[in-house]
Amino acid sequence: MDYSKHFSRNLTLIIFIFLVIAVFGSYFLWQFSEYILEDDLVLKVLCWLLLSTILLGLISSVLTKIAFKPLSKLMDVIVFTGHNSREGAPPNLDKLFLGREMITSLARQVYDLSNMSSQALESNKNSENLQDSGSYIIEHIGLPIIGIDNSQKVVLANKAASEYLNQSTDDILEKPIYDVVKLSFSSEDTFENWLAASQQNTAVNSRTWEHVKLTDQKNNQTRQLNLIANFSKDPKNGIETILTIYDRTEEYSRNDGQMDIITLAVHELRTPLTIMRGYIEVFEEEIGPTLNPEMTGFMRKMKASSEQLTSFVSNILSVAKIEENQLILKLQENNWSNVVKKSIEDLELRARVHNKHIELNISDDLPNVAVDQISIHEVLNNLVDNAIKYSGNSSRIVLTSFLNSEGMIETSVQDFGIGIPQAVMPDLFQKFFRSHTSKGKVGGTGLGLFLSKSIITAHGGSIWVRSKEGEGSIFSFTVQPFDNIKHEQEKGQDGIMRGAHGWIKNHNLNRQ
Ligand code: ADP
Image (tube, rainbow, N blue to C red; front, side):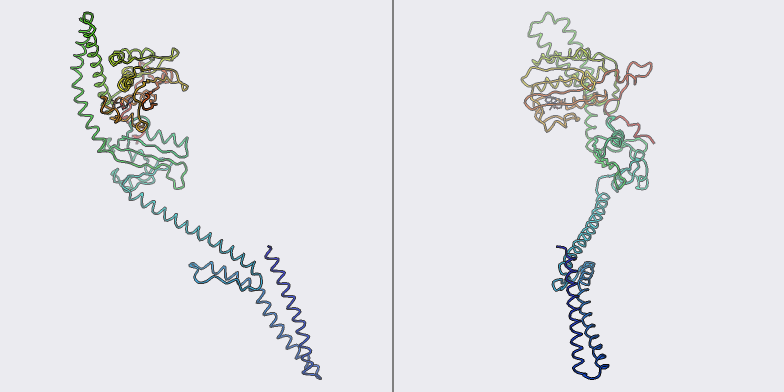
């Protein structure tokens, strides 16, 4: 319905009625004047003029009231919505004689608009409140939180952060993050590298690092922590990256303490073990051919056990070296098939003693690899030893090597044994981790996979596992072709030196 047309039609009608009333009214007034003043024309006219004026005045006053009533009601509505608290009743539009529908519709729109704007105001107020409480929480939460902008300057540091870093907020704010917080990461996969990659490639990103070391201005280690970083490109508040620190000094120091005692004890095992292995070899050579099959079996078991003990000792000492950042790898050009076969030679005896058989599937077309032979031997040793330990009644172990689609040499060790529960898969490569299903039944330290991962990462490769409980596991890792990194070899050197996956100082992070 077109309310304004309806309104103007009604108004025209009313004006017409009033005009008719005015005309007839004037006529009756003239008749009335003639009746009371029959002879005096002048007086008659004057009387008629006076009465007509009064009548027209009354008519125009009523007409004006009727015509302007809708406008004044609309004003009342607007004034009513303007009241802060909207006290009292809203203007009553029911009694409106002219344009009731039009004004009711307009009033409804005015009310709607006013409600919308008050809701917007309310939500603004709420978001301001939220922002206020967000800042309050950040300031008072017990976790150190640091915000940095896109030029890597600190723009936010809460109370806990300034206490944790032992620096006043003024000393922290507006300084480059790397001057304020000196961190050493457990690999070259550092915060700085992650941030550079995030700034280039992503809009949002987040990452957690465990076992990060915090050093003071004099490079003395003060705390150990887990670090969480959340990155968001071009944020409105200018805080591009938020760092949250979870202190783990107590827990990690306890582990380090355990390692110190173990290392000391294991170090002492090395000399007698070397002597024992030497004598076993002498016995094998001198009296081996004269022994009966039963005695030959005993001799093999003795040799396999001494080799297992040697691997155990070397595992522990390597992990200890990693912790101290003293395990240095020398990556040299090697034929991968030769490296694998040399490692497997030792392992085959151990496999045979446990009634297992290792199948080798190595592609012929592999390029030469860049590896540190001793460390890679430790990796293969750990993976095959696990395959032996955790393969239950199955006797098959398959070792496969091939050139994968990314141009890396991929090797996997597959067994058909107990498998690994899905829930523990993410923890497997952590130091001291042992799945509860194998804890009681099979001996171990929980260091083999941690060490393997550290060594493979230092080689520039990666290591992962696929497994199904009850069906077996496949541990795979990659190493790179020598050609990929040969440019890193310095003149006069016969290899490329790499720090192992351990407390490698991140030189960039320590720059001033
Ligand atoms: P360890 O074998 O000395 O316990 P590792 O670091 O080599 O330590 O392995 C960690 C854990 O991973 C083991 O305790 C075991 O629970 C699980 N695991 C490793 N390899 C296998 C495998 N091939 N099959 C089943 N479980 C495995």
